[in-house]
Structures are given as structure tokens and as C-alpha cells.
Image 1 (cartoon, rainbow, N blue to C red):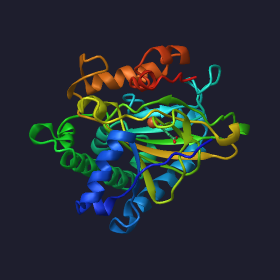
Image 2: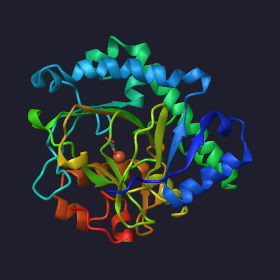
Image 3: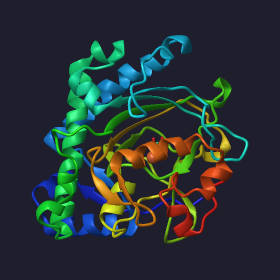
Image 4: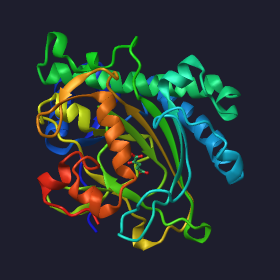
Length: 320
Ligand SMILES: O=C(O)CCC(=O)C(=O)O
Ligand SMILES: [Fe+2]
């Protein structure tokens, strides 16, 4: 299977508004909906160190007994524990191959409904969340500049700090085959505006609009994978592309533990935009519809465009 080819943007160059970098950011969001972000020389890679600290804590947390993890309070679809195998996977009769801890931004910042692992490591998780949030907000700001979007329409204003949102940090663990894992994550688009994703090993695939094939995303140390999500696509009147992606282990077998960490920037709950067919909806409504759709069977997800943000239909691809 082919390896996907993308822009690699440098966050420090973007911060100094280098024209070439801004132009690449715009092209990446318009044509691919996906790019690598090199973070190694921004503040000497501090965000990468913060990420590493929280990932080490989470790797241990995932080893705790299932009945302990199941006691984690679920406040919303953006905050709580998701056990392995409760949703469909990639093939018709398989189920998903990951467990995950979701951490809502409002919950971590206001310290509400926090599991012990967060309340005892509050500074570590808040520091990482703040860095991830800063990176994505600056990208939104630069996208407004590069796309000449001005005034109240500027993309960064979709996330007013005083308004609640479903912005969320997610730690994922894909156990190996022998531990009832299968490494799978269904084909989907993300619900919010932008996602900052770090993966430690291969498995992530995107559906390429250029080759019309699933392609593996290579793992690049020190680089995040950034992808455009549905809300930004809708708000931009489909100028930007939200990318269809899934996880399938290379050679069909999940040989080792796989970990991924995603930060989903999502618009304020009351943000109104025109959805798939031009109908008015709020960011919160789209988010709830989206998570409800992940529970459905794959044929249902395939025929109902919510799970894939309408992209599967646009691309003419069947998702199972
Ligand atoms: O595990 C991965 O590489 C991707 C996870 C993902 O796409 C998601 O959680 O939305
Ligand atoms: Fe995703």
C-alpha cells in the first residue's frame, strides 16, 4: 500500500508569518485537509516533552483493571472512558480495537468530574492541553490570514474562551492481537475544527482524493499530524477539505501496543453553521449526531453521511 504524501509545515516559521509557509498552510487545507507540523524547534520542543510526560502517565493508567477504568465518570461524549470494542471497526463483522480516555477542556480547566489520574497530575495535563490549544488556535489565525478571511468571520473566533465547547484531549490505546485487540478504528472524519494528532506507530490511513486509495501515513518523530475537521469544512463553505481517515494495522495484525494522542479543537457549542445539506445547526448538535452515528452498524454509517462528514459520498468510497 502507498504512503501518503503531504506538506510538512514548520510551526516556528508559521509563527513568524513567513509567506511561503502561510501559502502552504492554505494549500494543505484546501487540497489535502491534512499536513505534518514540525514542532521540534518551537520553544525547544517543549510541547513534545509535555506530551511525553502525559503519555507515560496514560500508558500506566491503561494497564489498570477494566473494572477500575469503567468507574471513570462520563460527563459528555467529550469526557469519559471508552472501553475496547464497543463500536464497529473497519470490516463488517469486526469491532473497534482501541480503548480511550477522553478529557473535556471545560472539565480539565474547571476541575469537574476528573478521574484520579487527572486530579493527581493536574499541572502535567493542563500544561499539555494549553500548548495543544495554543498551537491549533494559532493555526486557525494563520489560516484566516492566508485565506483572507477578515473581521467577525475569522476562524480563530469560532472558539470564544468564555463559551463552553466539546474541545477534548483523547488518549488512545490499541492493544495487540493476543490481548483481544485488532488495531482498528472506523473510517470517519473528525467533528470539530482542527485536530492535532500524535501517533507512536503506523496504522493510520487516509483516503487520498488524488489517488482514490487508502494510503498509510508515515510516522515522523517530533511532528504532529494536523487535520481539518467537519466544522471548519462547513464554516468555510467547503473551501477546506475534512479528511477521511481510519486505522488498520499494517499486514492485518496488531503486533504491539499502539498509542495515539489527539487534541480535538471544536467550535463553541452555540456556533451556528450550515451542515451537510445547507441546514442550520450548532457545533454541539453536529457533535452529538456524530458520536451517535459511531454506534451504528457499518452499513448504516455508510449510508448515513454523518460519520464521514459527507466525504465518503463526495469521494465515492464505500467505508467497509
Ligand atoms: O489512532 C489514530 O491514529 C487516529 C485516531 C483518530 O482518528 C481519532 O481518534 O479521531
Ligand atoms: Fe479521527
